[in-house]
Amino acid sequence: MTKKIISSIRPLRRLMFISSMVLATGLVTQPALAVEKPAQPKLVVVLVVDGLPQEQVMRYRDQYTQGGFRRLLDQGAWFSDAHQAHGVTVTAVGHSAVLTGAYPYQHGIIANEWIDTTSHESMYCTQDTNYRYIGEETKPDDGTAPTNLRVSTVGDELRYATGNQSKVITVSGKDRGAILLAGRAGTPYIYMKKTGDFASTSFYLQSHPSWVQEYHSKHPQDRFYGQEWKPLLSDAAYIHDADDAIISDAKDRFPFKYESKSGKPDAEYYGKLMTSPFVDEMTLDFARAAVEGENLGKNPAGVTDILGISLSSHDYVNHAFGPESRMSHDHLQRLDRLLANFFTYLDKRVGLDNTVILLTADHGFPNTPEFSQSIKRDAQRINSKDMMSALNKQLNQQFGSDKLAIKWSSPLVLLDYPLIAQKNLKREEVENAAARFLLTYPGIANAFTRTQLEQGALPDTRIAKLMQRAWNRQISGDIMLVTKQYWYFGSGNHGTSHGSPYSYDTNVPLMVMGKNWIKPGNYTNYAEVVDIAPTLSQVLKIRPPSGSEGRILSEALK
Image 1 (tube, rainbow, N blue to C red):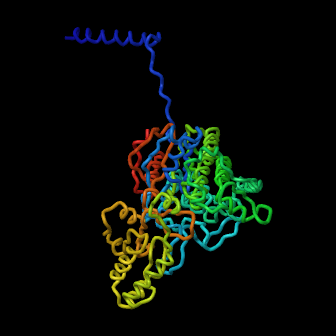
Image 2: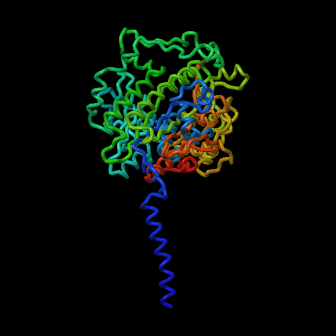
């Protein structure tokens, strides 16, 4: 028995000896060690192009350079059916969605500004009179703090997870664009229309760091004085754009010259720059200064930094001329070149292999009513003042009381509930009467009452679902209106505005690029902007923001 055991062991020893000799002499090639990818990116860059519809991104694709939008489309993951999935598609609401993953009923930013339901005073989304701009004039309703934002952001959670070692810096032409990306733990910088400088607020800092002061000392905002904005491409490139005569006055056409009556850079000039390619150029220049001044992407603690950039000017251009215009077309082409240069800079400074870049928008845009009418669409503007007057006249006739509809806070009517109670009227009867009348008013498609919204008793439609998400029980008004398609609340005879639950306002770009974390490709499945926050949280290995309801875009993650 012992001999059998010994004989069975000897062949095994011989095999082990032969194997060791083969390895020692190199007769067998060992597999190469795989290069380990970084666990987390060194820098996350979140770009929000204010007022950029997805259809514009695709309409001009053939004219992009290799390094801007095309780079994101070719090397990144892009979701062609991505939406701001709430019913009030305006700047503050859209920016709030990006890094919170929350809808307005949770995050509390229901519009750019709204009427307080108790005081009936106007409330701006980021106003807080306890804080001021650093070194700049500050008015009571200026945007200085995230006080009204009720949930955390990705940046807040990243700073929490790293013991405040990660840096979160944001920059924008608009206060709400910078502050609502920064959350409470980041540091926003905002373009000041009176001076052309970028400033933070006393909510975040007591004074600007030295790199900001150095940037200001060079007065880079003055270099555009006297310059003209002319078309970048040949006339043939714009052949499919709307006729200028349909969408604008004769004085509002190329070329646009940026100067002021004083003959030198001043508040008039700095304000005019918002409707130009130049504020976006300055925003990206300031972002470069922030990367270097804060050493973003090279954090000595070895943790990830976040850079949020909201590019504001496309919104101004689309408001003035519509997304069908030559001006909007040209502005996007110029933005494409600016982004290409910025991505090249990031590659040299941080390395794109160490970076995740995400681009989206806060809302889309409808065509101007004039253009829509020219192609036989039913499209007009609704004068809210006239509508409120007609509503109160109707309610007075029915209930014998004047001004039961006390305030307009787009797209909401506020009813005077104390007066309703005083007159011994039933709240629900007044709500229903107001809604019935408004449904007969030109341009109104839907009217939802507070009672319906409180009870969740809306129709089972996508439009109703988006409006329910946009309504906040504590701060929203009492009758929520939806316009007909291509109509909007406004006045005048040119320009356009957004804010509806329709696809031209909700469908926005969602593109994300990061070689080590993102699977490139066109993803045609439905996605929402609120999906960004949980997806970035997954990449960064942090908890999602407190109000996040989006899903992780796992199909695009490696």
